[in-house]
Length: 370
Image (tube, rainbow, N blue to C red; front, top):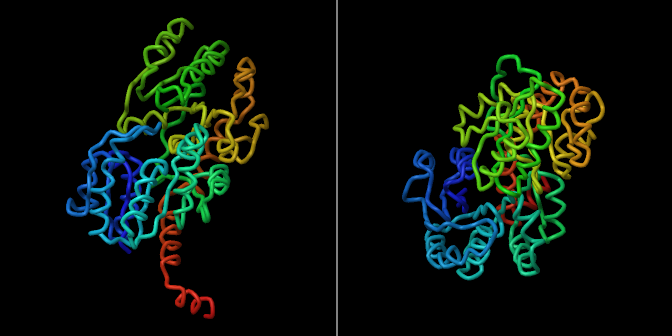
C-alpha cells in the first residue's frame, strides 16, 4: 500500500503516525511546514515534499493554499493509493482539492485532531461548508472520541473509526507519589484556560499546605499566569518549568499524583492519556470527551478514576479530592490505558480497514461468499 501523510511534518503527532505506519506501508509525506529531523529515519527525502509555510490552525492560510498546485503535481507523480490528511480544515482541504482538480487515483482518509471539528466549523458558514465537503470526500475518517465521531457524522462523514491517539508504549511506574503533587502541561494559550488551572490549584492549596503545582509548556499567557500566582501568594508552591523534552516530562508525570487539564474545547488529549498511564488522577473540564474518557463518572463516587471540575464550586474541590482513593484511581487509569489507549493495535485495525476498502468490488463479493 502506498500512503501519503499530509500534515505538519514538524508536529510530534504526525511523527507518531509516521513511526506507526512506516514499517507497514510504502510511506510518503507532504508537510505544510518542513520536517522534524526524526523523519529522516522513517521517510527518505525523495519521498517527502515540504511546502515550508507557517499555517495557523485558526484559518486564513492563504499561503498554504498557494502551495496547492505544486503539491498536486507532486501527488500526480507519487500516484498513491491513499492520501491521509491530518487536521481536516487545512490539510484535508489540500487533499480534497488536489484529488478533484488533478483527478488523482488516490482515495482520501482523514484524521480529525479536535478543534478542526469541534471549533472551526462553528466559526462561520463557510468553514462549516468546507469541513462538510472534506468529510464527504473522505472514504474513511478517524476520531479519538465518540463525541467527535458524532459531530463528524453530523457534518457529512460516512465512516469513522474511533480510537484514542494513544501511547506507543506503556511507561514504567515511578516511585511512590506524594499525595498533593499536581502537574499541568497543556499550552499556555486561551483555548486551554491555564488560568483556571491556577484557580483550581489555589482552592486546594488553601486547605492543603503540602500542595505543589508544576506548570510545564509555554505560550502567550505565561506572564499573566505568573502574575496570577504572585497575586494569590503561591510563588513558593507553583513552579513554571517551560517546555520539557519527553524524558523530563515523563519524570514530572511519574512524581505527580494529580494531573490538571481544563481547556475550553477538547477531544481525548494525548497528554491526559500519558498522565493516566503514569497512574495520575486527572482533573478535567466538563466536556463530553472527558466524561467519556472517565467512563461517564461524575467524580463524586469513591471509585471514580478522575474528577470533572465544577468551576463554579471550586471551594468543594479539596473535599472531592480527599474523598477519592487516589492510589486505586491511578492504578485503574493505568490499566485502562494499557487495555484501550495503545496506538499500535489501533493503527493495525486502521490499515486493515484501508486494505478492505481498496479491494475491487468483485474481490469483496468473493470474500463475502467465502
